Image 1 (spheres, rainbow over the protein chains, first blue to last red):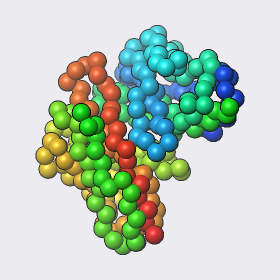
Image 2 (image 1 turned 90 degrees about the vertical axis):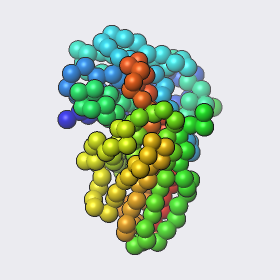
Image 3 (image 1 turned 30 degrees about the vertical axis):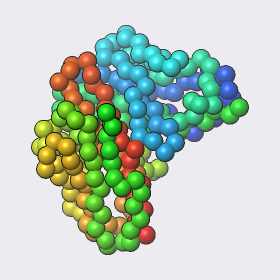
Image 4 (image 1 turned 180 degrees about the vertical axis):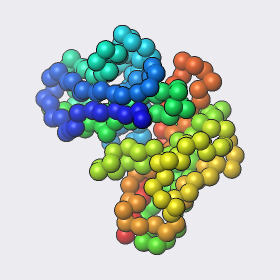
Length: 113
Length: 116
């Protein structure tokens, strides 16, 4: 079945450091890929998405590129802020699987001033 | 729009009691998802509905769990009897895929369930 694997956290960084969170997937067909973010005490919200190979999703300084050849969708940000402290989830949507969104395990990121 | 509304926000109950979690999706959304989040298992899909009909309930852990969607604006997740291992945050999410470029889930704030 479809699955998403992302690096385990927690990831602890200093402000202005470079952030990378690895995400790989297995899916039938051509899924859409997403990064969701969960701030403390809140539900998940969409951060960015990409719907086909080589697409780059971007939002709030975060970027991720859909790499079909490596089945990856790594999240990056060049200079993190304390406000980026959250849990980040990689996810895929395979229409062939009935519009079911499959999430990775989540990666907790803590940015220290 | 008020977004996806879940109630209660927090629930503390004793083992063996019945627990009912409630969700009001965003108006016009035809898909509704129930997820459970724990430290050990991360975010698990329990069940989802399309047009009020359950499509996939393979994630429901056991017969103690049941979910209903009697109409387009309301869904419940019931646990009877509850057990301490059911303690988790339960999220409801809704969306519509009628717009092909949408593909975005809107999550509620969750219900923090503690079973003592």
